Amino acid sequence: MDIEELTRKCLSAGTDEEACARHLREQILSMKPGVSADYALAMARAVVEEVKNSNRAVSDIITYTKADVTMGEFGVGSRGAGDFFAHRQFPKIIGGTDASVGVDEMDDAGAVEAGGKYIITTVDGMHSRLSDYPFLAGFHVTRATLRDVYVMGAKPVALLSDIHVGDDGDVAKIFDYTAGIAVVSEAMAVPLVTGSTLRIGGDMVLGSRMTGCVGAVGIADHLTARTATQPGDCILMTEGAGGGTIATAAIYSGFPEVVERTINLQFLRACEALLKSDVLTRIHTMTDVTNGGLRGDAYEMAETAGCRIVIEEEELRSLVDPDVLRMLDALEIDYLGVSLDALLVVTRPEDADAVIDIVRSTGVTMKKIGYVTEGPGDAKLVSGGEMTDFIPRFRESAYTPVKKVVDTTPHDLEAMKKRVAQAADAARDKKEKILRSLQRAE
Image (cartoon, rainbow, N blue to C red):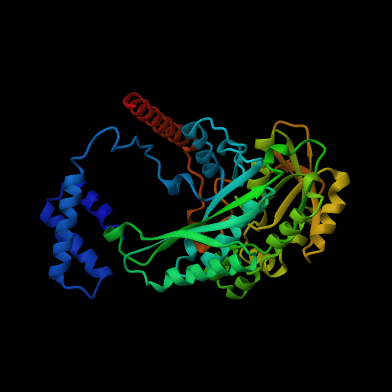
């Protein structure tokens, strides 16, 4: 519960300060039943005072231009069309850089060149619904961030973590979360070297919600970025059992036994083997099936590389862990639109067997699932002999009961896109204004 936001809404509605404080007192008591009514009222009055003072702080640098579009209604973080559109705004704010792989390429990680090597950096946020399952949150986010390094053709060399827990959260959460990170860290011999621990919103957010991220740094001689995909290539995919998304679906949909299927290092072991082989230099692109499932990743790869990607469904279902697939089918979740944590490799047809053999040597199954042709930068799906558009939906497949309720496409999507783009433009303009001011001051 964000008591600062509650107070802002109360005051903006014209309610007098003391009435707001007394209303807030009841909210505080509902979340903190162990405190006295006097303490809760004193805290509420202090919050009202802070919010009242902050409302007087108005300037270009303090305030921001609103889009009047919420994260939820635009699907940001839900790995679909809305989310992809929002992420496409970042390059114009960040601007041009000397990065070897920058944010404009929408790749799994970024890369800069230094000392004749490529330094790869990436960060992944933990799954928001795993707040009450910190070990799973730590394990899956660490595996995810290492995947993003590996698929750039890089050897991971360090991990860093960040964790935020609400004011009422049990301290043990930060330890269990770290244990989940450490399992992957030790198993893959990539040290966890630094991190940060904070409360969400300090004193202003009540409850036990946890969120956090894990970042990774890697080093590469040869990059396997999405821009290297070219017509004539074939697309290979490994088996996958999912990660945080599948674990979440299992927990909240009554399939707890499926969670254990997600605890594996198959993807990372397969990548390690490829990195140590001479076939790595013959791989054009690697990525993981995460963002909006194969629908989202095929779309992003095609758009980034400027080629048509054709996915053939014939072999796809056989690459999904059987227990996971049974759950997805039972829950009517589209397996093509949900994160499977499988590895995608794009290479020349003549090199495909060599890649498959290396991956198979680690005990992981890999098959050919598609090909790349000349085209307008789109994706197609061949199923039952029929070719159709293969595009991400507004959100990824609804994989929990709550997501099935909110899984709707807004009627005014184009108008929302316009306002989101305008807000991004305003942020870019602010950046440039402040930069000019700082440069004049030097």
